[in-house]
Amino acid sequence: MTLTDYLVPALLYVGVFFYAAGSLGLLRFQDAELRLHALTKADNVGLGFVALAAALHWGSVAAAVKIAAVWLFALMAAGATAQLMARRAKTSAERGSDE
Amino acid sequence: MTLAFDMILCLMIVGTAAAALLMRNALAAIVFFIVLGNLLGLAWLAMDAVNVAMAEIAIGAGVTGVLLILTRQRLMALGDDLVSAEMPGWLRTGALVACAGFAALIGSAVLSVAPADDLGGSIAALMPGLGIENPVTGVLLAFRAYDTLLEAFVLLGALVAVWSLAPRGAWPQRPAALALAENGGHGVAAAFGRLLLPLALVMAAYLVWAGSDLPGGAFQAGTVLAGGLIIAAIGGAVSWPRADDRYLRVALVLGPAVFLIIGLAGIAQGRFLFYPPGFEKALIVAIEYSLALSIGVTLALQVAGPPVAPDHEG
Amino acid sequence: MDTTDHFMLAAIALLLALALALFRAWHGPRAIDHVMAAQLVATSGVGVALTLGAARDDASMLDAALVATVLASVAILAFVRERRSTGRKPRETQP
Image (cartoon, rainbow over all chains, first blue to last red):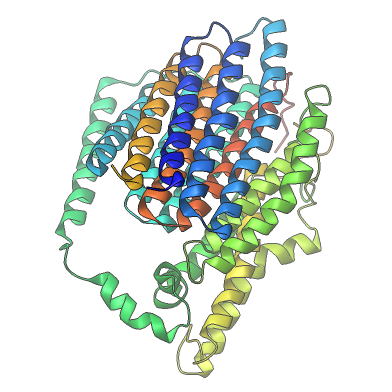
């Protein structure tokens, strides 16, 4: 057993934990803004740890670059969409509509 | 453990499909449809059919989802309340019976294929002659190239159909702009669109190139390109061209035209769509790159909808 | 359990987390809640693709994950662009 053999599952389950936390938050939190906060944890941190575990498992530069691209891209998209969704939630709440 | 994964996924697919049908709220139904597309993509991944998985995630979940969301917005702008009409009982029962019969038909067709008929093996035996290694690309661009050629023209025909819905006086103007309202986070979307479009271009180019030997190909690449174009349009980073723009027309017909010309040139060698020995890979890659561009532009314009008169946009 | 089993187990766990998010997609109550659920499902799907790719030693699943990340954000942007002026019927055009 090398260090990676312990590290990969550990990182993987940390990632799964954040995904689960994101799902639970989306389910249990009171209003849209809080739920959005939970959602971004799964997007950013959960996927980040899973990606790290996968990259270590592959152990090749090409795969690591591709996985890094997936994560960086998801970060970028999550950042942009989360802000847009928050604005949308705010304006629709101000208008008092469900939309 | 693989069995547990497959079972859970199957249950979720059936449940999501039922939810998409049963939801009264149109947006919720659309969301369940998108989720269904994603789950089907995962199912194809679980069956090691990565080509199909990519296509399902990109087209089934991605572009179709966008199309449905924009359709809902359009209907709301038209004052539609988005409540489906009550259907008489006989129609519901009839639809159920028809769907069940259709599902049974497809099921029996699938089950009638013997598991050991070795279709994959007979294709693998033919692959070395093509100089590429992805058997799906081999089937799509060489062994069943007729189908793909027709699909390329069907897609173009669908855009012609969309365009023909343009009201009088709107032709040949631009489709309605997708851009966000100025006060609604315009800067964020614009920055995202400007960043994403070049990345989508690179990814599309990579997917076509990888498609010769690995999963990928013109349809997946074209859809990624369309996604990039739609995001850039929503961000206001690109605006739709007029429907009679010369470069636009070239981009739309490039793929089908290159495919058709190469196919016709094959007649000189003996038969339609024959690739001369030694040039198979070069011709296939040339067809795929031009197809990817045309598919991307066509899909994006189909999402954009027919041209509108400049004075009533939106 | 070797590493492959860990990845498979993680894929199952991610699938279950995804199933949880579906309750929010069902109940809403606001439009934005449905859309957030769709976003979480897409992100979980990317996670499943990464873990499945590692479990099967299939690098092409990474490409599928990449495609999924791009296309997931398109639907969200299409949703947030919605014009505020809903309920206005556009002028009829005379045929």
